[in-house]
Image 1 (tube, rainbow, N blue to C red):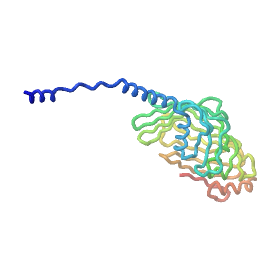
Image 2: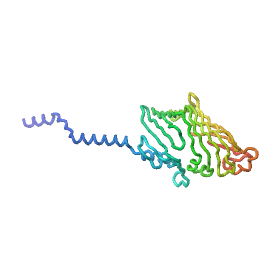
Image 3: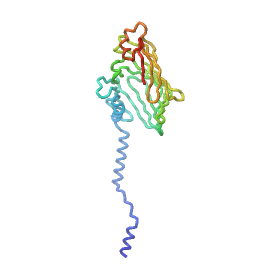
Length: 276
């Protein structure tokens, strides 16, 4: 009889353990701490991520605020060991917020932008879409010196006027489609390699199509000035293919001879430009 009772007791379902009130308290505290870290994550975490992703070429100095809303000073560098890093005057402000499909980023630079620009990122299955607001901004060309060669040799001076219009980039299975316009006007450019100041003003335009194209066109043209630059190309896959030429206007050949030797392969009075 004792044996039968023991068997019945061993087969009977055991009572569910009652969770201690302290266990619930610790769980709630951990969840609250995780939420607080997410909401109040310091801006220096984002600054560290930017530096790592760019291999040190883009750095955010003296970050303030949080990952979601903060500011820092932008500095461009040639990477580890760079001798001529260049910092942007003033501060760069950003705001980052999640959306149903991805993230929305807003940014404004004190020195160079009169209004906030925005970037909407939508992530899907093997797809990524980036859409920017239409905006204009002006940046000092000297900032490029911080990126190292060849900019530290050219020591460019002037203003870079950036404009976007209906710009959208869409990646599906690694393939790019571009809509809209990305335009950069280089105004009153000068270089330590040329005694002529300014050398000229130029326009670089990367153009998509209204329905999207996998091969956006690139066009380089001279607006004004004695140094004449021109060329065309396409962005194909992950590579830019571009051919063009640089030459001096009549009467300025001697002044630009040294610069033309550096810009590309000389062919008589011309310097041939080639990428990709």
